[in-house]
Picture 1: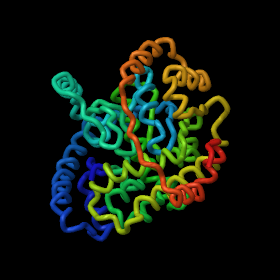
Picture 2: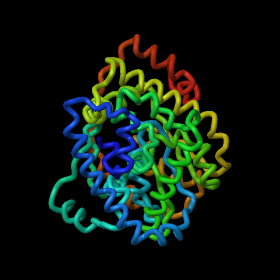
Picture 3: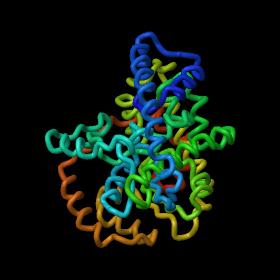
Length: 362
């Protein structure tokens, strides 16, 4: 449900039909609640478009900076670091949760009062603090807006193979991609309008599989890719599924191996697309960093990325980076159990291309 929390009623009705209303009995109450929320969301969407349609249409989109990498590779940390730079406009959690109405209902002051009065929540998969003003993945907005996102499959597990097509869109009809693209552009225009012409700073792991499409839309976009040891990524993504995805679906997982096989398949699909398409990125518009170097030296790693991309503004950003890095000294990473040998072999067999491209030992 968290993946489609911002859905409006027409899309919710269409989605229910698309999945044949296949909702487990113990999840039907949650589905009814979402349906009621979707009616309210549709009403707010009409109000926002009446008020802001002309301004949205006139908003021009600068070429964004994309942070790429598989889930649990350090993309959130890098996004948080770069979001300290005031030249960037980045989606907040409250915006991706309310993609149809965040211009009409600004809540920054309310959120700031709550932030001062209470402690931030932590994410269940890694204990990273967040609140409604934290940087967020734009896919959480375009998923309910377009219902053409692979994350729909994280709400309807039995239909996951159908929605996995929308990870890279390579095997999806062009009409499905266009539907997603229009939602993506609309959401970005609203974010840029909100922050008055800043450069969009975007982090959604899905974009790692969409480099070709992003360059088609934004020829001069810049890309930062962060890589991490694939074995660590697998185990951490497995925890993400167990704590954040499987409990929130409208269906039970269809097989005991559901999470493992899905993680293996999507990682391979993502990086096959990425390795095939990264050569399309113009010279000077790409930077590669590793989680390991980011963990050792946050400030220096960001500095090297800025230098590789020719980004201005690092001198003003550096003091904020140092302050953030100091605040993270006591952060404790999750400790994961070792991967059994048979599973290690399965991971390597599926992800061998990534091991070789990234230079991590088998």
